[in-house]
Image (cartoon, rainbow, N blue to C red; front, side, top):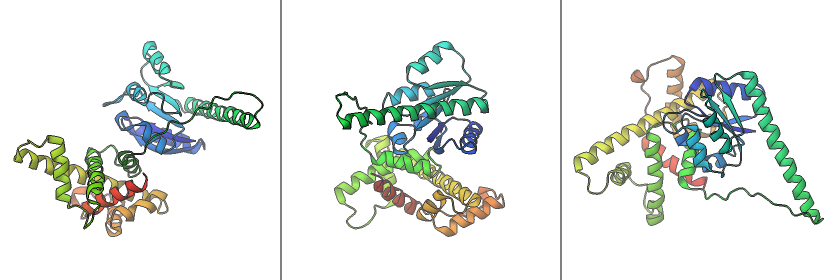
Length: 306
């Protein structure tokens, strides 16, 4: 089974991941600290079977998130909350959650609920397979097939998937990077990158202009460009930090092997790993990043997933 965990508490996410892995319940394929990051496309792209989501989160809570998903997510939803209000619990169940667990969470309760959800999924699959077999045998039984919603993969959805993989989806600069994807996708359709990849300055200028409007003052535009550059750099540093941490823990980690040298110069990755090992502060680190390389690879890799 494939799990996605949404909770603004790092400790809760770590605990749930540990339980799922220690008891061989499945694989955690994604995490987020707020519901605003979650979409049906992202969950479908990751083939999520079970979504575990907190009720109370700062930007978009669990109820709002499930309402946004509508009925287009076919997996099971387990909700966590400190709230015991019957009306809220009733609303959550009316929106299609499978189980409601009250915090503080209990390990045995979590294991029991997850096992029940898995059994439910397997049972539904068995029933579907039986109906499908009977339909093929054509014995006169009408089978109502529930097809998965057809979702058109967009460059933004692909980008969100990569940002999650790189451990930077929660960074403010991730929004700027997604805006860059959208701009580059349109740019390539019109100009096909005939000569070379657009200059980084042009990309930042275009996304800042789109955000503030064409009538924006030159001084305000410059401020937004600078702010955007800083947000993007911080987000990229977070990705580097995430990958270096994975490599330090397990050099053969699939994500480390796939993304580290693709998005960064390996020399810089090694420097970051040494910094983490020696617990060196970021302010004293001599690690350098190539923003243009990262943006270019981010765009090309996102396109591959369309």
